[in-house]
Amino acid sequence: MSNVSRPPPAVQPQNPDLGCPRTVCEVWMRFPLSRPTLGDQESENVRDAMAWGWISGTGSYVSAFERSLEQRIGRAFATVVSSGTTALEIALSALGVGPGDEVLVPALTFAAPAAAVLTVGAVPVLCDIDAETWTIDVEAARALRTPRTKAIITVDLMGHPCDYERLAELEISMVEDAAQAHGARTGKGPAGSFGVASIFSFHVNKAITSGEGGAVLTDDEELAEKVRLLAHHGMSPHHRYHHTVAGRNGRMTNLSAAIGTAQMARWDELVAGRREAARLYDARLNGLGFSPRPQRTGVLPSCWLYCVTSPERDAVVKRARHRGVDARAIWPALSDLPLYRPYARLPCPQASKVSRTALWLPTWSHLTPEDVEAVTEVMV
Ligand SMILES: *Cc1c(COP(=O)(O)O)cnc(C)c1O
Image (cartoon, rainbow, N blue to C red):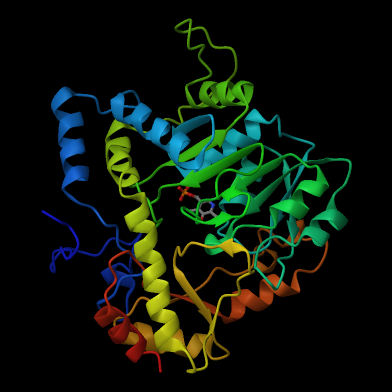
């Protein structure tokens, strides 16, 4: 049976990761922000893992997920872990980033990259974004590099790949955060193929999901071994209970991997479905005072959550939410948050500007033209 039109049960409290929980909403959200597309294969894989008792961080779905990621992105080594944030922390640690180091991070992003830098004991240095792509401004990064700069995290923001040709000129060790960019590409390759390491998230609101989950990808075998070691208690894979570093348990469960493996087989369908949702929104909102997020020619972005800007952003969001559409203002710029403001050595006006005018609309693959009509109706 296909999952395409299976609605969530009407009486079940909404998942706060996807929509607004009932208790904090003005009204019941008819349209959550996001919704996973789960089908029979996902269920079957989970049942299979359960039947065999393989429910921890070891199992055939874990390795199947890793092999299919390697194949899909064209990288030599993938290690799946418990979340995208864990993937960032482990990638940074594996690169030797720690106390005394600085890591360049864009000022407009979900906060995980900056938080991961702090978690490993280093200092995030916030760079403004570039108006043309909303990704890290290469000139800002150049201006902010110091002898302590150990790495740069490049976020393919909302599915738009960064300017990897110009970033390469900086010759800074790069971690590509492709958490929002499953299926995006540039002329040089797919999102997830850049940097000495790249990470994905498979959180439920991402285009490909395992519930919670993440992955670190690299072509560097030594780095891949460090990643695996750090995610597996720092324990030698050849010598049980022989710990060579203070590792963590960052493993993904075989249950999550069972879902993720099924999703990998639907990669093209799920990515195309979100792109089609964006196309429908673009067509419907054209001429109504909304601007689609900018896009550089020569790249094929993916759609994570559909994003537009409006000079009336807050009023539009309020109107939509009151009518059961979980439209949301995007994140504040990190440079405008008290926690992260001290890490902005230069002003980040572009990040602030976008953060004050942009909003997301409900997005999932298999969003129908009728859904788009109903969502946009409450916005204008
Ligand atoms: C979602 C996301 C993450 C973190 O992923 P989790 O799996 O939720 O920990 C990291 N970076 C970006 C840009 C993200 O959007």
